[in-house]
Amino acid sequence: MKIALYGRQFSNNSLPFVQEIIDSLVQHGVDILIYKEFKEFIEAKQINPFNAETFADHTDLTGHVKCMLSLGGDGTLLDTLALVRDSGLPVLGINLGRLGFLASINKTEIKLAIAALVNDEYTLDTRVLINLDSTETDIFGEVNYALNEITIHKRDTSPMIIIHTYINGEFLNSYWADGLIISTPTGSTAYSLSCGGPIVFPQSGNFVITPICPHNLSVRPIVISDSSVLTFRIEARASQFLVSLDSRTETVDTNVVLTAKKENFSINLIRLYNESYLTTLRNKLMWGLDSRN
Image (cartoon, rainbow, N blue to C red; front, side):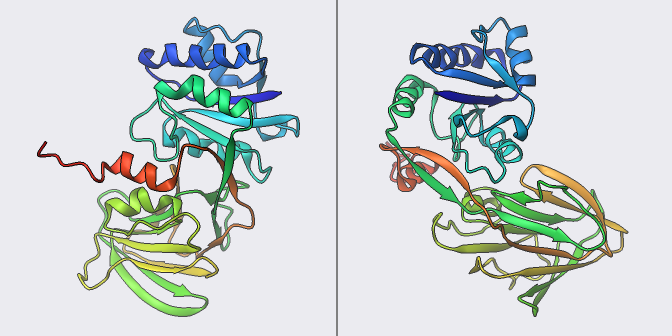
């Protein structure tokens, strides 16, 4: 059995947990494949990778790899999209960061989680991705999709932009705002939530359109079918605006027309049997707790 590890650089406080993960995998007889830059980082921090092999990109992750462990927070797990792509390789997030909606395994659960993984005591939670296409330019190359959201935003301190929005070719609205978020159900607990968007269950089959600081107070977030095709034409005083796919951002000319739709493949997140989406919501948002006690 071979398992891939991916991570970023992080503080020294997390280093013992990285060693614990590697030690636990070795004890279970797992062959380890570590992202090349991450292996160099942990070796410099005196972490013993036990002669683990390395991988550099998605082409090194062939069919013999069982799954990928993402070591960090939600942002680290989002990075794995560029490595997993359309392979269907399952991803398990171990939270060495802060909130961790996607990286749901906390530091105290590492050994139990790896034992469950080795013994196939888990299910696959399939999550929808959202695709971004554009006219005249190839903005994000081959990785033109997101797990959480697409964000259209004004540049720096420039004035508001106008985002002319169409659903399946029919005009919806011209958003006078700082920006617009098009969120998947997974991303409904991320940026969209902080801008007043609703929480949408992962298998609901929807996207959420959430304006960022709209000038018109009657403009509210809306929920649409994920079979919809969205088109955006940008009007602005500046000649450029920003587009983000999760944490990746590019500067785009205002004459570029954007199209968003459901990606034709999904990502598989590993969910252990003692987990559920409701449990994650309650734990991360502290629902049901009385702060007066």
